[in-house]
Amino acid sequence: MTLATEEARRFIQLADDDAAAFHGLLKLPEVKFRLACFHAQQAIEKLLKAVLIFHGIEYQRTHDLHTLTTLLLKHGITPPCSPEELTRFNPFAVIFRYDDTDIPLIRDTVVEGMVDSCATGRARWRNE
Image: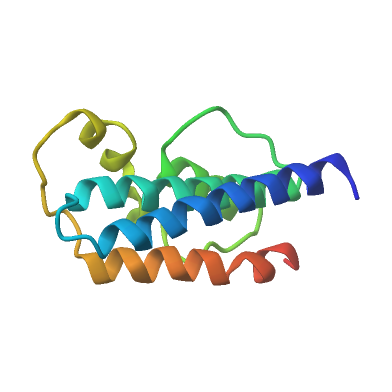
């Protein structure tokens, strides 16, 4: 196993942990939606970075999902969601972590679909 493969697998495990946290928090009525969405954003970010690492594509340190998906597209790798769709998650990475207001930018079912499609797209990405 190469170092890149090992690092990509580590990122995938971290992404799986965040996806599990998202799904668990989403079921708890006392937990604000923005907190669950933080973990959704983190899961997607880590999966995108895992794919970049696996393919040997260098990226700058960023939480911007639009930047990461655009980089994948530039290298001929199709993400499961468009850069424009994933941009909707960007505020959850930083802005809403320090804000106590839930702002409904996106519905919970849409978030679940995006997290799940990223998770199921892992194997396909490896083969592109």
